[in-house]
Image: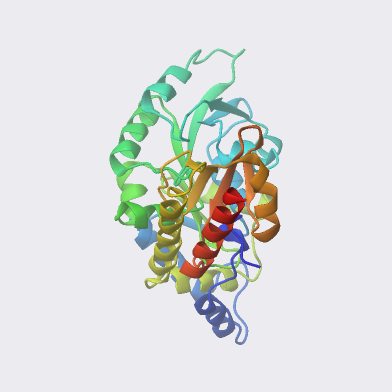
Length: 342
C-alpha cells in the first residue's frame, strides 16, 4: 500500500531500526536512567537551544501534549488554542478529560493564532465565575500545513508572557517546519520564548518516539511526577532514546523532512495543472489540503488512502512522508487526471 493519509502510515526508517538493534544489547538501567537516554536528552537540548531544559521521552504525541500542558495548569484554568488544533479535534478529548481544564478555541482561517486574538481572549482575570486563561497552545506546523515564522512566534510569545501566561508548542512536525523555514529547531523554540514543547519524532521516521521538553525553569521535578502519573513513563526507555539519537544526532531528521516536504511540493505543482482541483492552503510542509470534484474522491481513496478533511466542502488532506517517492506522486497525479477526465 502507498498512502497519502498520514506520515504515520510510513514505516520506521532503516537507520532507526538499526539503532534499535544496536540498543538491544545486554542490560541497561530502567526508567531512563541509562547512558543512551541521557545522550538523547543532550541531543534534544542542543536542538532546542536550551542546555538546562528538562527532557522526558514519552510514548505518543497525545501523551506529550497532555503532559506538557499539565505542568502549568490548575483545573480552573484554560488553554487557548486554534479551533483546528490537534488537541481540540484529534485527541478524543484527552486534554480536557485527563487535565480537567477547558480548551478556549479561537477561529483561524489558516490554523495560526495572532497576537491580537490572544490578547482579546484574556478577559475577566481574577473572576471566580470565569475559567482563567493560563496556557496558549500552538502547532508548528499547524493542522492546515501552515507555518509560524520565528518573528511571528516571538510576537506571539511576547503577548502570551505579557498576560502572565505560558506558551506550549505541539511540534509533531517540527522537523518539517524547521526544514521548510531554513532554520534551526532552536530558532522556533527557545530563541522565541516557547515554554514547553512536544517534540515529535514519529511522523519523521521514528517508531513511537516523542518527547516533552520543558524550557521554562523551575518545574522539572513536577514534570517528572506528571510523566509517571500520566502513564507515560517507559521502563525500557533506551529504545525510544536510541531513535532520537539516530534521528537527531546527525542529519537524518533533515533528510527525512526534506524528502517529505519536496514530495508535497511536487504533488502541489502537479495538482495545480489539473482542471477542477484547487489547493485550499499554500503548502508550507508535507500536508496539502485540496478541494476535488466530489465524485472522484471515493474512487481515488480506493486506490490511495487519504482522509476527508471537510467532507461537506469536498476538501481532502494529502500527506507525504520520508519515504514518498516521485513515482508515488506521479502515480497519484495520473489517477487524479484520469478520474477528472472520466
